[in-house]
Amino acid sequence: MSDYRLPNLGEDIEEADVLKVLVSEGDHVDVDQPLLEIETEKATLDVPAEAAGTVSRIHVNPGDTIQVGQVIITIDTGDAGDAGNAGVAGDAGADAPAGAPSSEPAAAPATPPPAEQPAAEAALTPEPEPSPATQPAAAAAPAAPAAPAAPAAPQPTPTHEPGDAPVFASPAVRKFAREVGVDLAAVQGSGPGGRISEDDVKRAARERPAPAPAAPAPTPTSSAPAAAGPTLRPLPDFTQWGTVKREPLSRLRRTVSRNMTQSWAEIPHVHLQHHADITAMEELRQQFKERAKAAGGNLTISVMMIKVVAAALRAHPKVNASYDEEAQELILKDYIHIGVAVDTDRGLVVPKIENVDEKNIIDLSIELNDIGERARNNSLTLEEMRGSSFTVTNLGSLGTGYFAPIINWPEIAVLGLGRAQHTAIWDPKRDEWSPRLIMPMSLGHDHRVLDGADGARFMTWIVDAIRNPMLMALEG
Image (cartoon, rainbow, N blue to C red):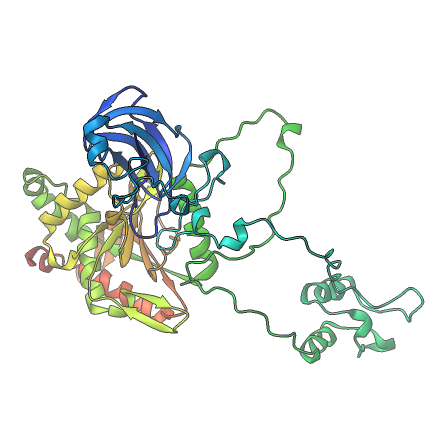
């Protein structure tokens, strides 16, 4: 018998959800035959068999969250397999391969059985949450008996008692004092009869002693999750108004939710909106779309735009960067890997196209067509989902005009493309109105490292380049 464990899935991946069990107990399996279909972060993977044999026991079920190193299937490899398999129980003299069981108690995995494991959330795209197996040993061991804990220190409350002098302040000032944590009973009012104004509260807030320094909180670049987040408001009981049903979020949806929350909470977004005249670009697209189709691609405005964006990033390297808040440094990237947001029935995924600046438009149309189909078929690899330096998202096909895209952390900018429409534009050279195809664009950027002027120059460069797309067609 050989216990097969969930292998290492790659850097930062500690757990996965079981989507399908592809074999049954009693089935014969060959080497590299898929055993499970699992989902981790934004990719779906098959877990293959490392040895041929008969499935003796299946330890997991669809819907389970499993950890790296956890036993998932037991395979009977037969006598021949046992003789050569270092993972067979009792073969203590052999060097056990990774993922195989050991007869030594000290080498037993620290991972608890699946039924006892918490359903941990998916890892953030670049930074995973620790799995139960990687938690400090002290957290897993039962706590030693201790003396009864002292009662928690009460929250600061106003020192004003009923017998004290009354406090004169308007309801608005009282509310403001509560928000900034100032005790009105300790504030000297400057108004008539000692009435307290908002300025008095501000002065008291400035003059109060500074609190003792607290332990530094984890920086955004730390892989450790925050010890405690904001208190969530409890939802009402919706059943009091009618029938409801609950639908658990998929691992992908949980990942997107967490990533967007992190990005919006940590990055001060600035959004700039421009419109671009893509009339000449559309004419060029019509001219070359059949050539792209014959080569296996699909020449779209998105394809042409990522080529323009790549050139813009070369001209503005500060936009093709990430911000290291802990070191207070900007990490400038020599590569230009552009993430392209793809809408799938599972949710939003953002695969990347590498070295966009080194490829011509026909090649990009083939690659984008391929990566889009594989995203919708759920066959992207984890590596294809990581390492982008800038993201482009297009909601034009869904009828959206201007919108405010959220930055794909740890990038510092994102470009949103909207639905292009024919619009009458005044042509001063011809002294007449001219029909033009106008596309709305929205740039979101990190105001910690890029000012509005930086974003405006980047967008203006793109708009000017779109007006002369022939240069783009001649590249590569």
